[in-house]
Every structure is written in structure tokens, then in C-alpha cells.
Amino acid sequence: MRYKPPMLNARGSSRWLGAAQLKTISLLASASLALVLAGCGDSAEDPIEDFVGTWVYSSELSGSAACTGIASLDEKPTGNKTFVRGIAHSLVDLTPLTLDGSVRCNFAFDVAGTVATGVPGQGCALRGGDLFTLTSWTFKLLSPTTAEEVAAADIASTPNCTYTMMARLTRISKD
Image (cartoon, rainbow, N blue to C red; front, side, top):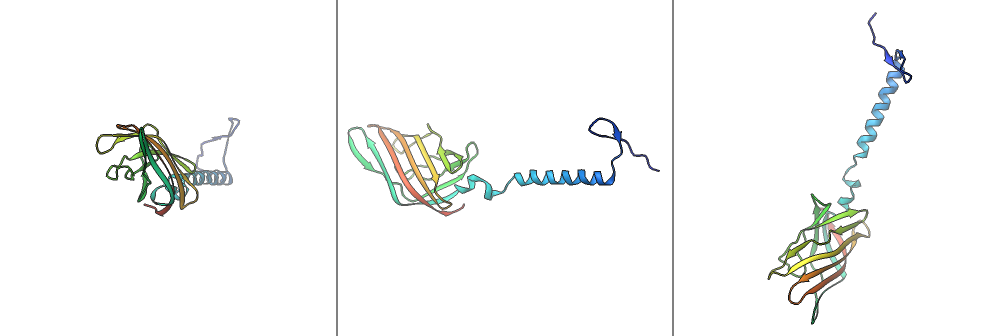
């Protein structure tokens, strides 16, 4: 007969584990592993994936730059908005600025549920040296293919300006 080392039960006393008990322990371990792996999720359950891709601005939009001592300038957003995964923050907006189409600020956004929020205080230089500084920016999913964007920023220039924008968007691709 082969020697089997004793196993300890919950009370600390030794006893032999039978085949049925070993099978139960094995099934419990397998079930636990399956639950852990299922908790890892896939991209369909990742809320960041709901934002990543290219969005197009719809007809419901407004945007303006209000400057001290000057009539407001019409600065409606145009073209496409592109979100990609970020490293330090959930998302990065690669969209050129409406005010200066050659400038990409690559603003960082954090995601909570169906809302991506731009990190306030981020800034970038426009052509000519003016500084565009984000004060608030939200991108809210209304459905898997529609969203609403509301933004505000300060523009340090002569004269100083405030930029505001509101728009509806439609998702056209998942990049």
C-alpha cells in the first residue's frame, strides 16, 4: 500500500481526502478560475471602446469666440472628431481645433459611464502665439452612435476671448 500524507480539515485534525472530495475541490477551483477570467472582460464591455473612433458633427451645432470689445466670431466645429485610447488618461482627442485647423492639442479625457470629461487646464498654442486653455469639455453618449459635446475655453490673446461650443455628433467608425 502506498503512503498518503494526511490532509488537515477545517478543525486542524488530519484525515484522508477521498476521490469525491478531491473532485469537488477541483470543480470549485475550476469554477473560481472561470469567474476570474470572465471578469477580465472583452472590448465590448470596455466603456472606453464606446468613445474610440471617428465622429462627424451634425447640423445641430453652435460655436463662438467672444472677445473683449469685439463682436463674437462664429466658430462652429467642422469636420470629424477622432478619439483614441490614451495612456495617462482614458481618451485623447486628436481633432484639429476649429479656431485653427492646423493645430491639434491632443486633449486628454477621462471616462465615467457614458461621459468623457476633458481635463481642465490643458492648453496649447495657436498659430500666432495665442494660448487656448480648456476650462470645461464634456462628450456625452446619447446612444451607441450619437453624442453631445459641450466645451468652453479661454483664449489668452489681445484681446482676451472665451470660446464656447455645443454640438451633436454621429459615430461613423470604430478606429
